[in-house]
Image 1 (cartoon, rainbow, N blue to C red):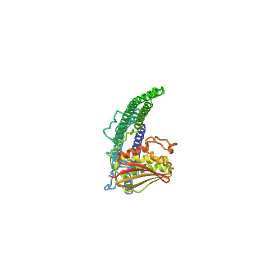
Image 2 (image 1 turned 45 degrees about the vertical axis):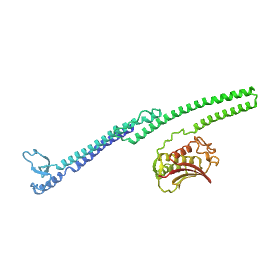
Image 3 (image 1 turned 120 degrees about the vertical axis):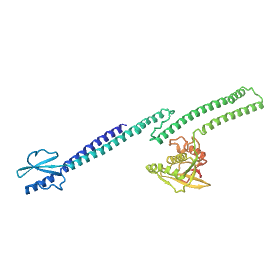
Image 4 (image 1 turned 180 degrees about the vertical axis):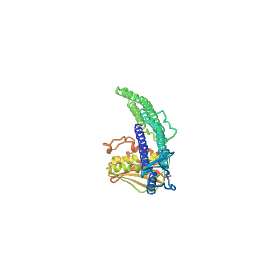
Length: 408
């Protein structure tokens, strides 16, 4: 707002200077060109000096009368000038129509400049009241979101200048609020699960301890009874192992909220979004980026999630490739479009290949790289929700990760 105030002051000064300079130019022009009657006075003075008589005034534009010195010589109802010719004074009456017109022109110019100035000021006031002031109020929204104040919706202004922006901010707020609720629910569910499983584990564990204590004290001397006790201990151990498996399964379940709005979109739309972002980014890090030719078609799925999938795969290629070349290739197979991201400098071992789509899994090549081990896991889960698939291959010195999209 302070910057706009400075601009307002500069514009106001510019308008004042424009008025001043325009009037100075017009008034000086009026002084230079507003006295054409003197030409006629000079011509008439010359004729009187030659002939000694007052010439005929017909056809003259400015001089209306010539009066020789006498009674009422200095009394006139119009403007006049006096000239001395051969020792006698002559009065030349004239009308300055051109000066009147010039003054009218100056007034007209000033009125036009005034209207323009009023319009500019009105527009600036409108911008300040209707655009900048509401936008300044919106600057508090990110701060409030950062503090976790997610319940208050962002209100749209009546003029709707920020319709898409406000809609986007409000959608962000709602998504953050939903994510917060999901996280709380997830934490609650996991806590309940752990409490339940820990309670269930206690029963077989107590039985194992009792059986072990009885055997250690020699309470069962019969071989058959000892064998039965051993089998019971083994059974309870299997039961505990089952509970542990449930914990592991729960920790590897779809703990992320991967909502997908399935619809239809053009392959070219997906490719253009990827090219716009990565053409510049990869050129900055000196990585050759190639997008092969393709036949445009309609695909099934969520365009935003599809972009997310390809972006994750490309980011993986940037992180684990040698930085020389990344290409996007296209092929068709059984009514599906295969979009393959190939990066040079394969660093993935064949033994790691079957595990790269598992959650929290990180291969040997990821020891020096930051990450959570979720990127490709998320990609595959999204593709499955869009009725597609994702797989990876090692081809020579290249790593190829492919997303399979179903044609519409």
